[in-house]
Length: 261
Length: 352
Image (cartoon, rainbow over all chains, first blue to last red; front, top):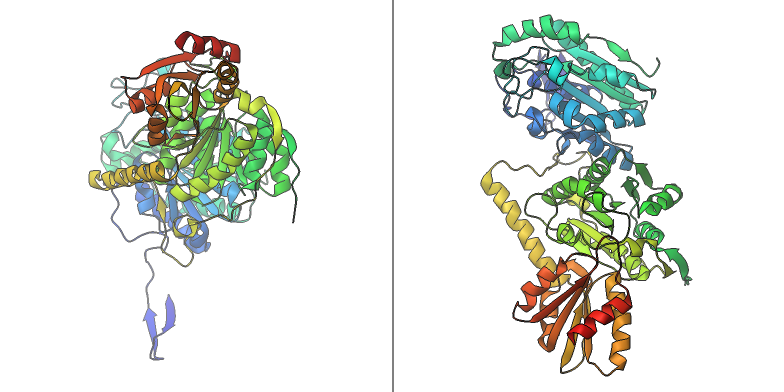
């Protein structure tokens, strides 16, 4: 890539070959995420999309409670911090009062699929023109690895020391499938970030989701299967394998719904 | 010059219209008796005024929608009644911690639990002592007429702006349901500082973060100190009350707020005819409580009677302020029963 800039003295300086840089929508700070965690990758992709669609200056990010609670320190746009599970309600209040803003929530599976189930279902059903980035790593990360509604059968967590017993606590909840049963037009997709190929796809979906919002088309929801090596208790590489082997068969990666049908 | 005619309005409708007069054009709600008329009124009126009306899936969601809109600097409010207000306490605590302005209305019904749908003043503790978690207060306004409800509702938005704080208007069910003539006072231009703090997209400035999360203890302590200073300023600048206290000796001082104060006035009128010297102290702000003013009003009082539609909540503040050494009595009804003037008179006679 080559781009040209004019310095103060009227001199023309040519920079060459800068092919990779931090997106403007991401702050130049170190995150608190654990080694091997995929939040950083997802943050970067959201930031890239905000840059590419020139949305940063009219965007409000809504941070969740959970591992991404401090996401507002990483996104270089205006941000608010919601109560646990209430990000879609808070985003609704922001967007309804300011239809010109771009509003996204960034939520984990405890936040969105457990304590915030009502808020996400009704925001989707009302067709709020917001974008929801749903990071599903099948566990509560921030509090140290408890069972989430998305935890896999037999998966060991600190509150299911013998593995998730589906007879006691039911089966993992598939949020994308659940939301796609709603009649209201929306964009609903599940993706993953455990391989480069899936990362590229996820970025495409995020771009699509924000474009639907930019065009005031519909509610958009991108579920992203993510890893949590720390609380899964395995290495990042093993985590990617576990995601592929255990999560993907239960949580199929696909577009569930588009506003065009 | 526009002359506004007085209009006969239900309290709930007057509160709704007052908000629109104040330029509060974002409203999020969930139906609950005895204040549902506010939502019904605004469902029609808000679109006419070019505002936002949204019925949320729950009081939790409605209050968090208010939180979101408040962060963008919009004048925003919600209305509910006791069980719904309990659910809204989560967002109110966050709103207080984030320091954004928002207005809540509680048309109180009897409790605890689902209680009943009849009037009560049993949310005094919840309204004035915080209600949600953490060290915070809402500024609490308690009207006793429909006109005052309309006036205070308009003031509520100015106060919320001034302090970047939740403000709550509390009325018992009677205030919501009663009809009285109302005239809307002229609107003061909004003193709006939101361009300095609201999230509106970061065009032309550094991005802003609005949060109530402060993991560093010293940073959070600074926030708590700032909030405390804010409440101290409210105590200095915002206390409102009505006092009718005789010069010299006062045989009995009644202390009551909202509808109860009106009922006490009726009861007092008859007994005063018998030559008794009586006084009435009515706090209009429940937080900040008019402490110094009550202290002064109680100075010449031989006896005090606190009357509430509760099992006795405001009386704890009255005792704290005037001292337990005073001869303080309490009369209250619960369950949705509203003390009649006759009942209050009977109680007054017992004491005098």
